[in-house]
Length: 229
Image 1 (cartoon, one colour):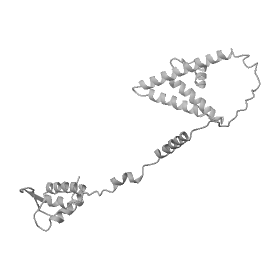
Image 2: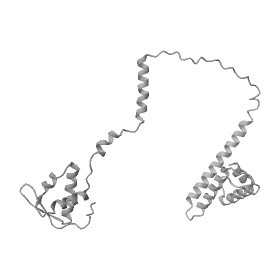
Image 3: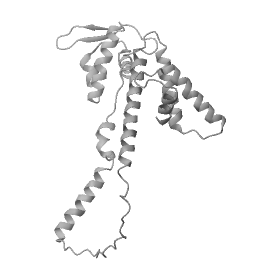
Image 4: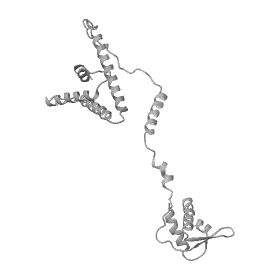
């Protein structure tokens, strides 16, 4: 900010309406001069250079409202920074004599660090249990929590299709209840129902009406694995 104010004052630019193209050229020229004299350039100088180049770039676009907005923001920051510098300089003129009187370092009183409070045993036990409880809350859940989930056997529909086809391959007439009775779990029954729907849709089995159940007959053997979505 100090360098920008210096360049604006040196080249008599209007701080309220900064000519960004001229300011970018002056700023980058100053940075190059610093590099040629092997001066260490602080990151703030390079950051400001990148900011000025960005404002210049967006100002070259056909629709450059963003560039105008960025230029006005920079002008506002410079005006505010200049006002702060002026106020600081004014305040510094009123500080003369503030440090003419000082006093020596005070000696700190010696503090007895002995812990003298007497606690009831129940109070200590409650505090200990609260600490232990916080510790256990941070631990991950035990494997036993997930055991009911991972212990259940998941039956895939594709595997159930193959088992139903083998079940019907002897040419005999079966019923849907026969297939459900052969199921070992609820997941197996759901897979059996979906497998029958898939085989019916692909016309590999035929469903016939019955008295209390419907019959299932194998029409053709599936070639390869059936894709089930």
